[in-house]
Length: 374
Image (cartoon, rainbow, N blue to C red):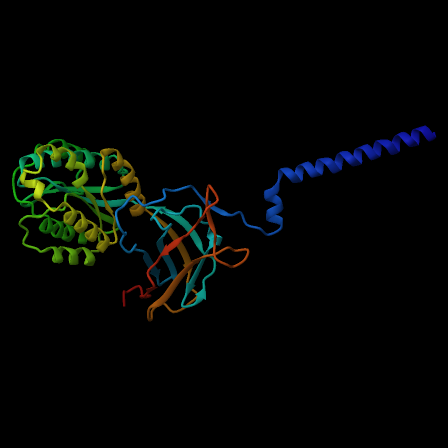
Protein backbone atom coordinates (compact mmCIF):
# COMPACT_ATOMS: atom_id res chain seq x y z
CA UNK A 1 0.00 0.00 0.00
CA UNK A 2 2.82 2.42 0.89
CA UNK A 3 4.54 1.54 -2.38
CA UNK A 4 1.38 2.35 -4.33
CA UNK A 5 1.02 5.75 -2.63
CA UNK A 6 4.64 6.58 -3.34
CA UNK A 7 4.11 5.72 -7.00
CA UNK A 8 1.04 7.95 -7.23
CA UNK A 9 2.87 10.89 -5.61
CA UNK A 10 5.82 10.47 -7.97
CA UNK A 11 3.51 10.34 -10.99
CA UNK A 12 1.73 13.51 -9.89
CA UNK A 13 5.07 15.32 -9.45
CA UNK A 14 6.23 14.27 -12.94
CA UNK A 15 2.92 15.45 -14.46
CA UNK A 16 3.23 18.76 -12.57
CA UNK A 17 6.72 19.45 -13.96
CA UNK A 18 5.59 18.54 -17.49
CA UNK A 19 2.73 21.05 -17.28
CA UNK A 20 5.07 23.82 -16.05
CA UNK A 21 7.57 23.21 -18.87
CA UNK A 22 4.80 23.07 -21.49
CA UNK A 23 3.39 26.39 -20.27
CA UNK A 24 6.81 28.02 -20.50
CA UNK A 25 7.29 26.74 -24.04
CA UNK A 26 3.90 28.08 -25.12
CA UNK A 27 4.65 31.45 -23.60
CA UNK A 28 7.98 31.59 -25.40
CA UNK A 29 6.24 30.82 -28.68
CA UNK A 30 3.68 33.66 -28.29
CA UNK A 31 5.51 36.93 -27.54
CA UNK A 32 2.92 38.88 -29.51
CA UNK A 33 0.15 37.63 -27.21
CA UNK A 34 2.12 38.80 -24.20
CA UNK A 35 2.64 42.21 -25.80
CA UNK A 36 -1.07 42.53 -26.48
CA UNK A 37 -1.97 41.62 -22.90
CA UNK A 38 0.48 44.23 -21.57
CA UNK A 39 -1.01 46.90 -23.83
CA UNK A 40 2.04 47.27 -26.10
CA UNK A 41 1.44 47.98 -29.79
CA UNK A 42 3.50 46.40 -32.57
CA UNK A 43 5.98 48.98 -33.95
CA UNK A 44 5.37 50.56 -37.35
CA UNK A 45 8.02 49.51 -39.83
CA UNK A 46 8.49 50.18 -43.54
CA UNK A 47 10.78 48.66 -46.19
CA UNK A 48 14.22 50.14 -46.73
CA UNK A 49 14.08 52.92 -49.31
CA UNK A 50 16.73 54.65 -51.39
CA UNK A 51 18.93 57.18 -49.62
CA UNK A 52 18.11 59.91 -52.14
CA UNK A 53 15.08 60.89 -54.21
CA UNK A 54 14.68 59.91 -57.84
CA UNK A 55 13.59 63.42 -58.79
CA UNK A 56 15.86 66.44 -59.21
CA UNK A 57 15.90 69.26 -56.67
CA UNK A 58 12.81 69.78 -54.51
CA UNK A 59 9.31 68.52 -55.21
CA UNK A 60 6.44 70.97 -55.22
CA UNK A 61 3.90 71.33 -52.42
CA UNK A 62 1.96 68.08 -52.25
CA UNK A 63 -1.77 68.48 -52.74
CA UNK A 64 -4.45 67.07 -50.45
CA UNK A 65 -8.20 66.74 -50.95
CA UNK A 66 -10.91 67.47 -48.36
CA UNK A 67 -14.59 66.81 -48.98
CA UNK A 68 -17.48 67.68 -46.64
CA UNK A 69 -20.89 65.99 -46.94
CA UNK A 70 -23.37 68.38 -45.21
CA UNK A 71 -26.26 65.92 -44.90
CA UNK A 72 -24.17 63.51 -42.83
CA UNK A 73 -21.42 65.91 -41.62
CA UNK A 74 -18.92 63.39 -42.96
CA UNK A 75 -15.43 64.67 -43.73
CA UNK A 76 -13.18 62.76 -46.15
CA UNK A 77 -9.50 63.67 -46.26
CA UNK A 78 -7.02 62.35 -48.85
CA UNK A 79 -3.37 63.15 -48.21
CA UNK A 80 0.23 62.04 -48.55
CA UNK A 81 2.56 60.70 -45.86
CA UNK A 82 6.15 60.60 -47.15
CA UNK A 83 9.70 60.26 -45.93
CA UNK A 84 12.15 63.16 -46.54
CA UNK A 85 13.01 61.77 -50.00
CA UNK A 86 9.40 61.74 -51.17
CA UNK A 87 8.71 58.01 -50.83
CA UNK A 88 5.23 57.02 -49.66
CA UNK A 89 5.25 55.53 -46.15
CA UNK A 90 3.05 52.41 -45.91
CA UNK A 91 1.88 50.36 -42.90
CA UNK A 92 0.57 53.27 -40.80
CA UNK A 93 -2.47 51.95 -38.92
CA UNK A 94 -5.76 53.69 -38.05
CA UNK A 95 -4.75 53.98 -34.38
CA UNK A 96 -1.63 55.91 -35.43
CA UNK A 97 -3.64 58.84 -36.83
CA UNK A 98 -5.01 61.67 -34.67
CA UNK A 99 -7.22 64.22 -36.46
CA UNK A 100 -7.95 67.62 -34.93
CA UNK A 101 -10.65 69.94 -36.24
CA UNK A 102 -10.42 73.43 -34.73
CA UNK A 103 -8.33 71.87 -31.96
CA UNK A 104 -10.92 69.17 -31.12
CA UNK A 105 -9.77 65.59 -31.62
CA UNK A 106 -12.17 63.65 -33.84
CA UNK A 107 -13.39 60.14 -33.01
CA UNK A 108 -14.18 56.93 -34.88
CA UNK A 109 -11.80 57.44 -37.80
CA UNK A 110 -11.93 55.16 -40.81
CA UNK A 111 -8.54 54.86 -42.52
CA UNK A 112 -7.83 53.38 -45.94
CA UNK A 113 -5.17 53.57 -48.65
CA UNK A 114 -6.46 54.69 -52.04
CA UNK A 115 -4.99 53.73 -55.42
CA UNK A 116 -6.93 56.15 -57.61
CA UNK A 117 -7.44 55.93 -61.37
CA UNK A 118 -5.68 58.77 -63.15
CA UNK A 119 -6.16 60.95 -66.20
CA UNK A 120 -2.86 61.87 -67.82
CA UNK A 121 -1.88 64.10 -70.72
CA UNK A 122 1.46 63.24 -72.31
CA UNK A 123 3.16 66.24 -73.90
CA UNK A 124 6.01 65.10 -76.15
CA UNK A 125 8.70 67.20 -77.78
CA UNK A 126 8.81 66.30 -81.47
CA UNK A 127 10.69 68.75 -83.62
CA UNK A 128 13.37 71.42 -83.61
CA UNK A 129 15.84 73.28 -85.76
CA UNK A 130 18.57 70.62 -86.05
CA UNK A 131 18.14 67.31 -87.87
CA UNK A 132 20.71 65.39 -85.79
CA UNK A 133 19.15 66.66 -82.57
CA UNK A 134 15.68 65.71 -83.82
CA UNK A 135 16.78 62.15 -84.59
CA UNK A 136 18.12 61.62 -81.07
CA UNK A 137 15.10 63.26 -79.50
CA UNK A 138 12.62 61.25 -81.58
CA UNK A 139 14.14 57.91 -80.55
CA UNK A 140 14.07 58.75 -76.86
CA UNK A 141 10.57 60.24 -76.88
CA UNK A 142 9.06 57.08 -78.34
CA UNK A 143 10.92 54.86 -75.86
CA UNK A 144 9.89 56.96 -72.86
CA UNK A 145 6.26 57.06 -74.03
CA UNK A 146 6.06 53.28 -74.59
CA UNK A 147 7.26 52.60 -71.05
CA UNK A 148 4.62 54.93 -69.67
CA UNK A 149 1.76 53.28 -71.55
CA UNK A 150 2.79 49.96 -69.98
CA UNK A 151 2.15 51.48 -66.52
CA UNK A 152 -1.51 52.35 -67.16
CA UNK A 153 -4.44 50.47 -65.65
CA UNK A 154 -7.67 49.66 -67.45
CA UNK A 155 -9.58 52.49 -65.74
CA UNK A 156 -6.93 55.13 -66.46
CA UNK A 157 -7.30 57.67 -69.27
CA UNK A 158 -4.53 59.16 -71.39
CA UNK A 159 -4.18 61.66 -74.20
CA UNK A 160 -1.00 62.11 -76.24
CA UNK A 161 0.12 65.47 -77.63
CA UNK A 162 3.23 66.39 -79.59
CA UNK A 163 4.63 69.84 -80.16
CA UNK A 164 7.14 71.54 -82.42
CA UNK A 165 6.07 74.87 -83.91
CA UNK A 166 2.49 73.98 -82.94
CA UNK A 167 0.59 71.55 -80.72
CA UNK A 168 -0.91 68.41 -82.30
CA UNK A 169 -3.18 65.72 -80.81
CA UNK A 170 -2.11 62.12 -81.46
CA UNK A 171 -4.70 60.44 -79.22
CA UNK A 172 -7.51 61.88 -77.10
CA UNK A 173 -8.84 60.79 -73.71
CA UNK A 174 -11.89 59.00 -75.13
CA UNK A 175 -9.95 56.85 -77.63
CA UNK A 176 -9.27 53.15 -76.92
CA UNK A 177 -5.84 52.19 -75.61
CA UNK A 178 -4.90 50.56 -78.92
CA UNK A 179 -5.13 53.97 -80.55
CA UNK A 180 -2.45 55.29 -78.17
CA UNK A 181 0.04 52.63 -79.21
CA UNK A 182 -0.89 52.95 -82.88
CA UNK A 183 -0.35 56.72 -82.83
CA UNK A 184 3.01 56.29 -81.17
CA UNK A 185 4.29 53.75 -83.69
CA UNK A 186 3.34 56.05 -86.56
CA UNK A 187 5.77 58.73 -85.39
CA UNK A 188 8.78 59.06 -87.66
CA UNK A 189 11.73 61.43 -87.42
CA UNK A 190 10.66 64.82 -86.05
CA UNK A 191 10.58 67.56 -88.71
CA UNK A 192 12.86 70.57 -88.66
CA UNK A 193 10.83 73.37 -87.13
CA UNK A 194 10.61 75.86 -84.34
CA UNK A 195 10.18 74.47 -80.83
CA UNK A 196 7.44 76.40 -79.06
CA UNK A 197 7.47 74.61 -75.73
CA UNK A 198 5.95 77.39 -73.58
CA UNK A 199 2.94 77.86 -75.84
CA UNK A 200 2.34 74.09 -76.00
CA UNK A 201 2.51 73.68 -72.22
CA UNK A 202 0.03 76.50 -71.60
CA UNK A 203 -2.41 75.17 -74.21
CA UNK A 204 -2.24 71.61 -72.84
CA UNK A 205 -2.74 72.87 -69.27
CA UNK A 206 -5.84 74.75 -70.42
CA UNK A 207 -7.26 71.55 -71.95
CA UNK A 208 -6.82 69.79 -68.59
CA UNK A 209 -8.94 72.33 -66.69
CA UNK A 210 -12.19 70.49 -67.46
CA UNK A 211 -10.79 67.12 -66.37
CA UNK A 212 -11.91 65.93 -62.92
CA UNK A 213 -10.35 63.42 -60.55
CA UNK A 214 -6.66 62.67 -60.06
CA UNK A 215 -4.90 64.17 -63.07
CA UNK A 216 -1.44 65.04 -64.30
CA UNK A 217 0.50 66.44 -67.21
CA UNK A 218 3.67 64.50 -68.01
CA UNK A 219 6.10 66.53 -70.10
CA UNK A 220 8.81 64.66 -72.04
CA UNK A 221 11.04 67.45 -73.26
CA UNK A 222 14.49 68.96 -73.46
CA UNK A 223 12.99 72.19 -72.12
CA UNK A 224 14.22 74.16 -75.13
CA UNK A 225 12.00 76.90 -76.57
CA UNK A 226 12.78 78.89 -79.70
CA UNK A 227 9.79 81.00 -80.74
CA UNK A 228 6.84 80.88 -78.29
CA UNK A 229 4.53 83.83 -77.94
CA UNK A 230 4.45 83.23 -74.18
CA UNK A 231 7.49 84.02 -72.04
CA UNK A 232 9.05 81.68 -69.52
CA UNK A 233 7.63 83.77 -66.67
CA UNK A 234 4.15 83.40 -68.13
CA UNK A 235 4.40 79.62 -68.44
CA UNK A 236 5.84 79.41 -64.92
CA UNK A 237 2.91 81.40 -63.56
CA UNK A 238 0.50 79.16 -65.49
CA UNK A 239 2.10 76.09 -63.86
CA UNK A 240 1.70 77.61 -60.39
CA UNK A 241 -1.97 78.45 -60.99
CA UNK A 242 -2.82 75.17 -62.68
CA UNK A 243 -4.89 72.57 -60.85
CA UNK A 244 -2.97 69.92 -62.80
CA UNK A 245 0.22 68.43 -61.38
CA UNK A 246 3.12 68.59 -63.85
CA UNK A 247 5.84 65.95 -63.95
CA UNK A 248 8.76 66.60 -66.28
CA UNK A 249 11.09 63.99 -67.77
CA UNK A 250 14.10 65.76 -69.16
CA UNK A 251 15.63 64.45 -72.38
CA UNK A 252 18.88 66.34 -72.07
CA UNK A 253 21.12 63.68 -70.52
CA UNK A 254 19.57 60.93 -72.65
CA UNK A 255 20.42 62.60 -75.96
CA UNK A 256 23.78 64.18 -75.09
CA UNK A 257 25.84 60.98 -75.75
CA UNK A 258 24.43 60.86 -79.30
CA UNK A 259 25.18 64.53 -79.85
CA UNK A 260 28.73 64.45 -78.49
CA UNK A 261 30.00 62.72 -81.65
CA UNK A 262 29.39 65.93 -83.61
CA UNK A 263 31.89 67.84 -81.46
CA UNK A 264 31.93 71.42 -80.27
CA UNK A 265 31.52 72.85 -83.77
CA UNK A 266 27.92 71.65 -84.08
CA UNK A 267 25.38 74.48 -83.70
CA UNK A 268 23.48 72.70 -80.92
CA UNK A 269 26.74 72.41 -78.92
CA UNK A 270 26.20 76.05 -77.91
CA UNK A 271 22.77 75.43 -76.37
CA UNK A 272 22.50 76.26 -72.67
CA UNK A 273 21.36 72.79 -71.55
CA UNK A 274 21.67 73.58 -67.84
CA UNK A 275 19.27 76.50 -68.10
CA UNK A 276 16.70 74.37 -69.94
CA UNK A 277 17.00 71.63 -67.31
CA UNK A 278 16.56 74.12 -64.46
CA UNK A 279 13.47 75.58 -66.10
CA UNK A 280 11.86 72.13 -66.31
CA UNK A 281 12.55 71.65 -62.62
CA UNK A 282 10.94 74.98 -61.72
CA UNK A 283 7.83 74.23 -63.81
CA UNK A 284 7.31 70.86 -62.09
CA UNK A 285 7.90 72.27 -58.62
CA UNK A 286 5.56 75.20 -59.22
CA UNK A 287 2.66 72.83 -59.98
CA UNK A 288 3.30 70.46 -57.05
CA UNK A 289 5.04 67.87 -59.22
CA UNK A 290 8.50 66.45 -59.70
CA UNK A 291 11.29 66.85 -62.27
CA UNK A 292 13.14 63.74 -63.40
CA UNK A 293 16.39 63.79 -65.35
CA UNK A 294 17.29 60.21 -66.35
CA UNK A 295 20.83 59.55 -67.47
CA UNK A 296 20.02 56.26 -69.21
CA UNK A 297 16.96 54.42 -70.54
CA UNK A 298 17.31 51.86 -67.75
CA UNK A 299 16.32 54.51 -65.17
CA UNK A 300 12.96 55.32 -66.76
CA UNK A 301 11.03 52.32 -65.37
CA UNK A 302 11.94 53.26 -61.78
CA UNK A 303 11.02 56.88 -62.50
CA UNK A 304 7.54 55.86 -63.63
CA UNK A 305 7.06 53.70 -60.53
CA UNK A 306 7.96 56.71 -58.39
CA UNK A 307 5.82 59.10 -60.40
CA UNK A 308 2.71 56.91 -60.45
CA UNK A 309 2.94 56.16 -56.73
CA UNK A 310 3.11 59.88 -56.03
CA UNK A 311 0.13 60.51 -58.31
CA UNK A 312 -2.10 57.56 -57.37
CA UNK A 313 -1.58 56.66 -53.73
CA UNK A 314 -3.11 58.53 -50.77
CA UNK A 315 -4.19 57.80 -47.23
CA UNK A 316 -7.92 58.37 -46.88
CA UNK A 317 -9.43 59.29 -43.51
CA UNK A 318 -13.19 59.56 -43.03
CA UNK A 319 -14.89 60.80 -39.86
CA UNK A 320 -18.10 62.40 -38.58
CA UNK A 321 -17.32 66.01 -37.67
CA UNK A 322 -17.94 66.84 -34.01
CA UNK A 323 -19.10 70.29 -35.15
CA UNK A 324 -22.86 69.97 -35.71
CA UNK A 325 -23.05 72.99 -38.04
CA UNK A 326 -23.25 72.22 -41.76
CA UNK A 327 -22.19 75.69 -42.93
CA UNK A 328 -19.91 78.31 -41.51
CA UNK A 329 -16.39 79.71 -41.59
CA UNK A 330 -13.29 77.69 -42.49
CA UNK A 331 -12.29 74.96 -40.05
CA UNK A 332 -8.66 74.33 -39.23
CA UNK A 333 -7.54 70.75 -39.78
CA UNK A 334 -4.47 68.99 -38.40
CA UNK A 335 -3.33 65.37 -38.60
CA UNK A 336 -0.69 63.94 -36.29
CA UNK A 337 0.98 60.53 -36.27
CA UNK A 338 0.96 59.15 -32.74
CA UNK A 339 1.93 56.14 -30.67
CA UNK A 340 -1.43 55.09 -29.15
CA UNK A 341 0.23 53.55 -26.08
CA UNK A 342 1.99 56.75 -25.05
CA UNK A 343 0.14 59.48 -26.93
CA UNK A 344 3.52 60.76 -28.12
CA UNK A 345 4.84 61.07 -31.66
CA UNK A 346 4.91 57.87 -33.73
CA UNK A 347 8.32 56.37 -34.41
CA UNK A 348 8.67 54.63 -37.76
CA UNK A 349 11.59 52.30 -38.48
CA UNK A 350 12.84 50.77 -41.70
CA UNK A 351 13.82 47.11 -42.01
CA UNK A 352 17.32 47.86 -40.71
CA UNK A 353 15.97 49.60 -37.59
CA UNK A 354 16.71 53.16 -38.71
CA UNK A 355 14.18 55.78 -37.56
CA UNK A 356 12.38 57.34 -40.55
CA UNK A 357 11.00 60.87 -40.42
CA UNK A 358 7.40 61.08 -41.63
CA UNK A 359 5.93 64.15 -43.30
CA UNK A 360 2.17 64.66 -43.49
CA UNK A 361 1.05 66.86 -46.40
CA UNK A 362 -2.33 68.43 -45.66
CA UNK A 363 -3.98 71.74 -46.49
CA UNK A 364 -4.60 73.74 -43.36
CA UNK A 365 -8.37 74.16 -43.51
CA UNK A 366 -11.66 73.45 -45.29
CA UNK A 367 -14.89 75.37 -45.56
CA UNK A 368 -18.16 73.47 -44.91
CA UNK A 369 -20.90 74.16 -47.42
CA UNK A 370 -24.57 73.24 -47.56
CA UNK A 371 -25.94 70.74 -50.03
CA UNK A 372 -27.01 73.68 -52.23
CA UNK A 373 -23.43 74.93 -52.31
CA UNK A 374 -24.18 78.11 -50.30
